[in-house]
Length: 330
Image (cartoon, rainbow, N blue to C red):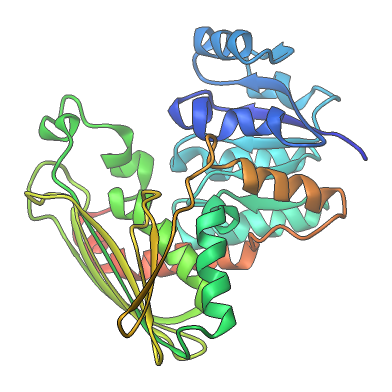
């Protein structure tokens, strides 16, 4: 079986544990080259993770004939230019979520990858995580009957770095991120709902900034409808006085409850009967998804990630944030 040889652009916190090790720990996969905007960080990562090539530039990495596919692990503002650069170099593209800053940019990435004959994958990696596959198994088995609606709540108090504009992370700077924490985290939920219930065809949202700590939205409410009729509604607020993470999937015969961003036990509830499934997250949460990409490229089995659904998730987020972005000029 051929080994898929990976290059990686970006050596930050996500690459350190969540994704990077997955490229050399997956079967038939190797991480052979890395680069980032910080040469010292690149060399440190390569040394600590035993990566053969620490490249000073993206161009140097893309010129490496040992690289078959490239993971773009940078902030959203650079996703489009880097993805296009990788595709035009004839390498398969694996880009962090969201695919790009806007729906139109996503479509351009898709078009260029098709034109150059390379594959495109987006890091909606929860589709391959065991706990979410268990939820899908429950739903597909009919144990909760016909799904009627889904409700998502993510409420958080501000992080310490959010309290001063001098220390704001890039995720809260619109010129880099394209939006706030909803675009960074909430989009994962929207993608999983697409995975579980089919395409979101209609969406309405209200976004605002209630805390005044930064320019991007900090509070979002949305309602939506999936193609099969399942309705959804969500509340995301990142300037609360408490933390809450809750998803409820309601069916005609029961319901499923779980925390989305932790690995606390899933609950299947039918009347007075409660079944729990305790499924810990893997040490490197992207590794199952990376393995599925490798298997897809080797013709073993399709990756559960879908390019059109990844584009659609950005469209949904754009629709939810459209009015706020127009009001605030980004």
